[in-house]
Length: 367
Length: 256
Image: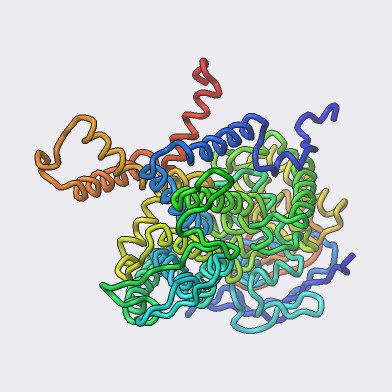
């Protein structure tokens, strides 16, 4: 376009996932590395990364409702719980105390997400009416209601203190609980879960990116930044707030079902207030409202204790010589990190990454 | 093409507790006119806009748009009838770029839900290309290309006003409500915005209702003017008559 150099005509490129080839190749490299890691890393590290991926999915969920749509949700853990129990009932094995239909993963995984989403929609009429502190309080109340229900629906959850086994790993009729023989290579249960979590994690991330670059994501951000203006532009507040809650819960449900399948069992006490708040912390540390933030936050949250342990181990510092035990130390440092982030980098890990990337883009120039 | 409707206020009264913001106001804005509402601070100009766009509910009386009674509708329902507005204190989405703000304006023109968004289906892709085309045309029209990917909070006030106008235009409305489009602007910026308003009115054939303090601009470009004072309608008519009206001069224009 001569004479109008600022007129953009390549709209396709504008809304693509990767803005250039370099980004695309970095992403490809990262994925190949992640797949390679499956065959190289020890079970311990595999488990950590699997957990990170699954926590990232739930964090992305919370990010949709809190980061994008700006609606505080302190009850994300409850939605994760609903998904977990839905999958446990559909895909778990029945015992004398709990029900279970022992169905295939192809059923229990979507059901986990949908059950959470439905619960999210059921409470939408309440959550949509409120905002700010009032919404925070209502979601806080949901945590207590959720905990109570989880503890008392014994036929589904096994009851407080006892818990139950969750869904079994069975896909397309193939039992994966004891690994899988692929040709001459034997794929362990940990490796299968790792690869599967990686896949779902990438898909979930793609979903968030898709949201952000299209109508619904823009509507969410509009509601966050100014709901009066958003409404005046024709955005139906009820519809979009409710759908944000539903999508968020869907992510939570999927994540919960897989997460507890990795650990094997679930106890109602898991879904307490601290559990829900943890996700808020992850989103804040990672960078609320960004696409990659929750992923960074999730990896930080799971790898942080591991790094501390590695540190203590390397320098041969025994637990006895510390004034606190390991768990206390981890929580203390994690709390400190949250405070530091809120004070110095409100955009979280994503903000740091953003600045680093721009620095190296311009390197060796400082501007 | 949708037939452009006329907007009518039928004896609208708006009260907040003991305060009467609007008292028995009636007027009609005919299709494709450039209608202006003027009056001193607190005269009820913005209240009229808020009654139209569903933010306030009139205590008495009705507001109709063509056949539709719109005073019971939610703001998003009013917007979906093709009535767009700007705000007196710019209500742009500050954490987003100019382009994103204008794309949000396209919301009404796109047709797919959150689940399609998540999957980015073929339909979404097609819709998004269209939205971007609309947005680029508006950016081109308002001459804000250089600010295209700037974040709103980094932009000067005059440009923000223009972006807000662009966001309203992105809705492809039949009727545009402009709340003090020239407030806080210098002469040059006022001239620019006046030019855009005239273009929107004459080229795009849109009905425009404009609220403003800037008498010079209103008298220059408006086709019909209504004068408000303390919630009462003082006068209505073509600008040349209004400036001669004794009551208006006393209440508002003053000496000079």
